[in-house]
Image (tube, rainbow, N blue to C red; front, side):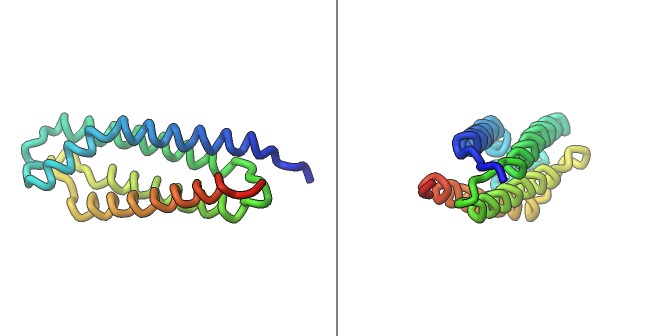
Length: 144
């Protein structure tokens, strides 16, 4: 069995996490637009074009997260952190699923957003990202 190079693994991990942060920052303005409209009960004032643009942007971001999930799944974690890596992958998968659920809660043609689904997806993302962060910290502080 060939020994895994921790530097390669940590490089993949770093790239995935930085890319995730960059995409989240990129989508934040659209998230805030929907969140504020839901909180103010003004979703009906968003146009079909507005909602379509947000849904498309969210889908592009979610597709990026799915690609990052695939990178994590394929990453060769050192044996000492394999369990932590698997937990990280599970948490990241849950995050990605929450992102897809949020995207799916937006219905541009009807000019609606399923508020319950949007809120549940937001909660799922927050919980999953908390676990991603915790697992990442545990991995980074592991003795190699």
